[in-house]
Length: 231
Image (cartoon, rainbow, N blue to C red; front, top):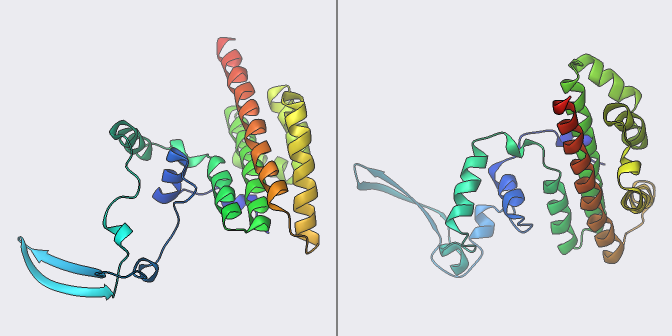
């Protein structure tokens, strides 16, 4: 199964686009996938001082849909996206994993969707804890040691969150937490230890429950930081 630690990385532009425009269908394609249609093909041309010096065919054909943008976004949204690309704002987005999970549901990969969505919630909680440790002046070694001692997800949500924010995740969103964590445990444990294939309905219900926990938790963190700054 995927480890949450592997999720702590810089996102590529495709992934950042997915988050900014909530586009679950932006996906990787190869030149051969692009060239699996009925028309002209992919041609690589080289120019020097405006004069074409070579033309190299890469694949034989290209689909008509690839000849122009499929999605036309408002210019203001595009400008905002460009500004965000220049910042570090995209580095901590569990939304990406939830968008990927949605994409996997549409592909019928329900097991993978559950794993991806679960990693989104775990990654979000982990990142918030790490950020709080750093704000409190706790160094990387101490942070890693504490996280290793509290490696269980429940311990991080209850014990560490309470320690850092004076409230645990279950206390922040009791009903949302109960639903999301119950589904997370049941679905992911079945997937990890059996050949269980979750249904589309239960997979979608699980994915939908996670943003509710994330959003309420994020709001409490903002309030907590504002209180600290006012003290």
